[in-house]
Image 1 (tube, rainbow, N blue to C red):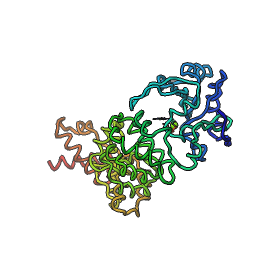
Image 2 (image 1 turned 90 degrees about the vertical axis):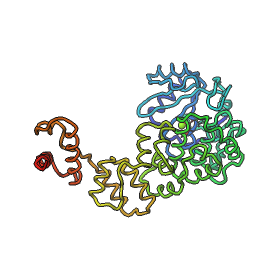
Image 3 (image 1 turned 180 degrees about the vertical axis):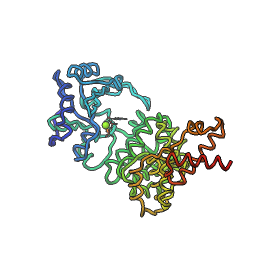
Image 4 (image 1 turned 180 degrees about the horizontal axis):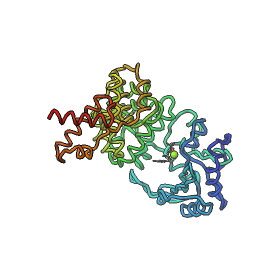
Length: 403
Ligand code: ATP
Ligand code: MG
């Protein structure tokens, strides 16, 4: 296969970790080429975060070649030919050229090959089937380069057949559309996504969550979410994801793109239930739960002490989430920046008394002690976390004197 063009070497290609991995893979004479996101983004002059590499060497040889160069390997998905090479601060997904011999909509049985065009053909979109070598040469067996430049997300082969092989490709289609799409999206692809959307529930929650959060992370996910709703994909994927207007109001307020917060803005109803269903981490579920059912109110026009109390109860992240959501709903964004600055500078306040202090003060252990401690804590909080240990003990004596 001949290269179609040559690009200038990108900084990430010349970094020592990248050079080291590529040299190790080529040590036995086989080529190794970049593929996927790094190639697309290099061609478009966008920053590259993830590096995927393709090679005709089978996975056991990939492991051996990397080990021989002293590179740490992780057998990430050996059955599919994927080995992770770790050279800090980077890691590289190295995948053996393959073709899919059997597919069931969710998994594939694969055969390794040394045929670059065959490997390109099993990939999802033409713009994802571009290869780039260490000299900057681009290989394009399927005409992905013009599609990439035109912002045209085109399935490799017949969209419906490719979706039946792996239903996740429906979500990937919209994700790449959101990230690279320009102009009218491919009609045949949209029709296939519409027709096969009923297969989405067969996908594992983890795969859906990963793709959907990536989609939500693009600079402006709204237009494509609108298309997904129109195509009947969004209601099947996530019936609760109906609050597009609230997400639209949130986007211009965000200090940075945060896919999970965006998901929270998009949902109506119980965020915790959605998070559990998507098998998100406990931290992520907790954030979604707080967005739909705030454990403490956030009032963007409340005074500084009210903000501190909210920060104390919610922590800066959930506080920031709720603040942005509230302002998305009310539109009162005047104080957003100063509130965020205060949240960023927030130091957790620690209530200065413990149960042991009450025992020492002569209180009998028991349920009343917990109540008393909580009452002093509430007073400490109402006094804006100012009372120190001595003042809290004085307050204790005062309450006891009243009793
Ligand atoms: P990103 O920048 O988001 O990582 P990417 O294109 O690198 O985008 P990955 O999920 O890392 O996406 O996959 C790497 C490559 O593997 C893709 O470019 C594509 O060629 C191929 N690929 C990944 N998932 C699929 C799939 N479900 N079906 C077909 N090919 C796929
Ligand atoms: Mg990638």
